[in-house]
Length: 407
Ligand SMILES: Nc1ncnc2c1ncn2[C@@H]1O[C@H](COP(=O)(O)OP(=O)(O)OP(=O)(O)O)[C@@H](O)[C@H]1O
Ligand SMILES: [Mg+2]
Image (cartoon, rainbow, N blue to C red; front, side):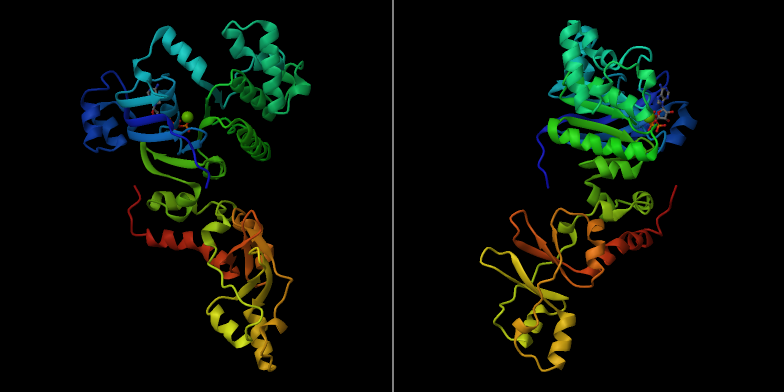
């Protein structure tokens, strides 16, 4: 698990109410727990955010996910003060955002954050390098300097060859890359991305997700990413916050969301997700039984117990051979007594950080898979049936929540 730095964006008990008198009755009702629809009916005010708290840590991709109208854009807009908030506080890099105004606010936005939106908002007849460097132009950076910075940002998103093309000549995915380059051009520590990939075709969208992850490996920005797509959230997010009707339902790592959904609402979402892509081997592997090649077959079978097998290792802890229980049964029936006569070296290995999806083929052989760490040492064992059980878990979770009332 990657460690991230201190919180750099924090929303603390943030309320946002839209209407002529946001701090009046509507806020009282919301604070008292009255749901959004009823607040609207009783006060004529729209609840944007209800007691929302989350922190985005330095270097993290934090994804806010929710259905249309759940408050995602409202939340991200509190971070750059495109919205005033009704109550609570928003702290960015130690600065109380609500206290900013005028040129102080402008400087803060410019220095701290870059923004990427669903609609690329490019100048269609201007060329790519002009669009990418636009943020610097606004800051009054001389042309040569901003073009140099724009070209660097364009190289990062793989578009340097198109620097002199008009943006209207580019595909949607390429245009969004220009948008990303523009946000990165000023090298801000924070990136705010509101549905940045939502307008793209599924295939292009996945490519953009991969690219963002690759770029993030190099630049380590703090990214607040908004999406209504749970697959995208789980794919990109180091942590994911699920919003519903303006309030936080759950915050967790993708694995926590998948394996421990906070309630039936989340569980319902999760059932459509391809979990094998998210859950890693470390989560489901078992401790491994290490065997001595000189021991008897009978004692090895005892040691293996209810597992499907055990491994022998070399002096450096690397797996050398496998005793598969399926082999042991046959060998014992034929009177074999020495473990070493039954050991096989054609076993499968996998790594702790690989995903379950990557292990289906190997699991298909029906034998335990050796799990190794970076140094190649045996650290665990993956059983084919555990992969399958893990895949079935969410279904059981949903069954467990079935009594819950869905509003
Ligand atoms: N300027 C506004 N005036 C009044 N109500 C607003 C305003 N902006 C947002 N809202 C309301 O606040 C709630 C949250 O809206 P928001 O735009 O944050 O949702 P969202 O999660 O971003 O949705 P989408 O996925 O459709 O972009 C909605 O009920 C919306 O109608
Ligand atoms: Mg929105």
